[in-house]
Amino acid sequence: MDYAIQTEYSDPGVHAQLFDALPDDVAGIAAVVRNLVIHYRGGGIEFTGDRLAEIDHRWVEAMLTTDQKRNGTALAVPREPVDRIVGCCRDYTLLTVSALRHKGIPARSRIGFADYFRGGYNHDHVVVEYWNGDRWVMTDAQLDPSGDHPFDTQDMPRGPFLSAAEVWLGVRSGDLNADLFGIDPGSPISGGWFIRNYVHFQLAHLQGDELLLWDNWGTMTDTLDGADVELTDEIAALLVASDNGDETATKELTDRYQTSPDLRPTGRSYITSPTGAPHTWIELIRPAV
Image (cartoon, rainbow, N blue to C red):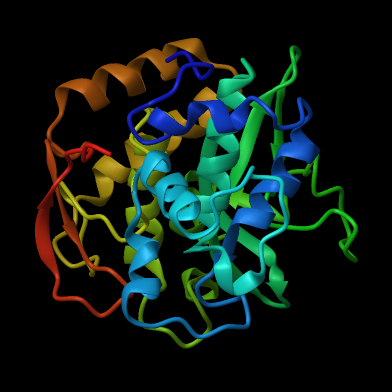
């Protein structure tokens, strides 16, 4: 797909003009996004009710509508943390990707696990990749580059962040311990089944369906019992090959995603939101603003 073109998820819609005034560089855009979003668990503020429900904004247009109703100013004007959009890593990334695409810079979201939030553990995470004219550059829009990080957050090496496909293949080969990957140490939302689901998220995001991290579809499960792990093996291998420049693998991924209802949401998702709302099927229809 053409990563310079907005998807239904990344399209700022009626708010597109707000991106015109943003910086033209990736670091500057990411800095503005950090002014717009606060992490629902890591931001130091406990949100409840309608504020916590902002984490279910799946469309960039909806995120910007919430911001503008609350703040009503240019995106670079400083917001107090409590006035920011409540979201997660996926939202920092998708807003950055949206702004980069608006500027004509090909960009996409990358699903995987990061080892730099807590020593000895790999938290589920979403980062930005953009095309600099020669290669895909990985950057973590959620991290302030002035912080104390053992790597360049604006041009991340492989290692601190691994794609879900890389992790899955590492677990399957016995090189990685699945118990060290998830949302938090000791959380039941971790391990092999969770890594497997994230391989399918990785594919969906790369195909332009930048879904919420609590969307569910196809053969995704909360256990490996009875799961089609062979399918995930195949998809993970193709994802890694595609990342390494194999155009045949890239085409096969696209073909399989478009033709298999097990690999993509077919108009609806079973949402298991951290808000505590009842788990339910919802239609993936972008609302009118």
